[in-house]
Amino acid sequence: DLSPQIEAMLKQAGQEVPERKPILEVNAEHPVIKRLRSIFEANGTDPRIADSAGLLYAQAVLSEGGQLADPRAFNEKVAELLEKALD
Image 1 (tube, helix red, strand yellow):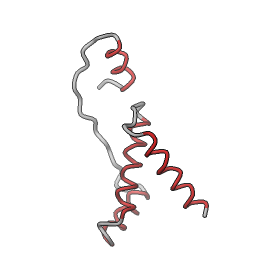
Image 2 (cartoon, one colour):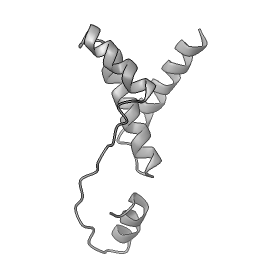
Image 3 (cartoon, rainbow, N blue to C red):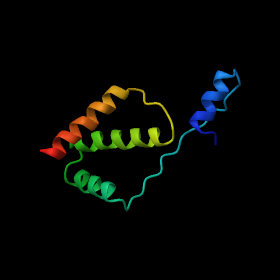
Image 4 (cartoon, rainbow, N blue to C red):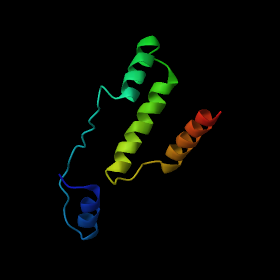
């Protein structure tokens, strides 16, 4: 598979970039995932689930060198988390 950086370079050079489906691998034993699972089991509509899933996905995109569709929303969620953590 091509990295996002290589894909961008190929596109800039006018080359065809093969279509690919990204794969998100989740470690079910990670403490964050375990905590999300327990929150989901207690209340499947808890808004922390969607917020956390969105942040985890954005982290994965960034760590692969990708671009976020809405960087401002990501920054707002991170700032919100920091505020809560520092209270």
